[in-house]
Image (cartoon, rainbow, N blue to C red; front, top):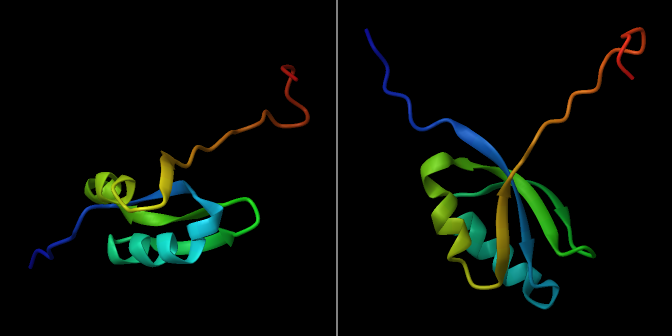
Length: 82
């Protein structure tokens, strides 16, 4: 039996107008964002969203930009490249 799975969630970082932080977060949640961290003082938050909903996040009032999270990997301490 095959199950239907939705789009894979992706991590995003969102910058919002700090003066409209609460309203922007509410709008982002309605647009499909699952908030994992809020940095109110910086005017940013992070969370996960279905990849096909990233454009909807960008359209929320008070949002300055939406960027995918990126992972940086450092070489092991005993690696010849440092």
